Length: 358
Image (cartoon, rainbow, N blue to C red):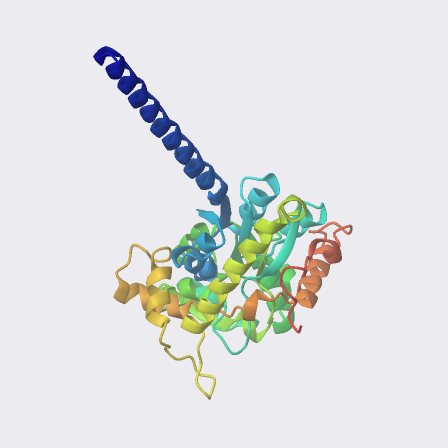
């Protein structure tokens, strides 16, 4: 064989080898990309408030519980409860955790929302929402809940959870709600500002806001909602479409949320044999996580006590007090804030989390 034939054969063999390597690399690359696409986390958006009550969400995100379920979770924050429900109903968010309102029940009654679990529950054994009087009103004699008659009261919106709470508290305290001036101020920050400035006489707010206000001398605590109305404050919910079309995603979300609830209870609701709240082995870890979202501008030494003070009760596994939610719907319906057609049996879905008592 001539030398140039040998060289040409060698060159052709080399080209074939290079081509084989290139094709092999392409196949491997495609396989890797394909596997990556198949394993890509599913994006979900969660609507919530920057309250301690949202802690199970923060914990689930920071400790990787959502990621473990193959979910890429983003939390979007709102200033009041009703916009959270609207975000879920409109499809702008996938899941929501916040207080129940008349507007929420109307949306749910139209088939837009499904309640799948529990958020906070007012319970006598734990910190709960406080009834506050402004300094001006307190000095003028508003020193107890039974004296609320004739005074102004701040709420976010008519038909809000604040409206429900003051309505029930007033009834139990023997106060004529009609004698009070209810002032809808659209957001919690507006409510706080109005109380501090004396533009309103009273309001109800979660303990992690109420206690610092009282401790700073900016308001006075005159009572606690739990002493008048132990109730299911809020819930975990999603859209009816998600339940029907993305049930696997809802199940993954619920599992991650329940892990967050378990950690929240272990870290912030631990009690001793006498029922007194105590620090547990995980308290500091949970406080560090929650601090990233709540009182994040405060140093830890200031934020941690406020977070602990605001840790309200959440039922084990996020179980919903279904009977109480039905009672709330009836209260709103009796006063014309919720359509008579809204049926909680149709918008409460206990197939993801068993209800309280089961």
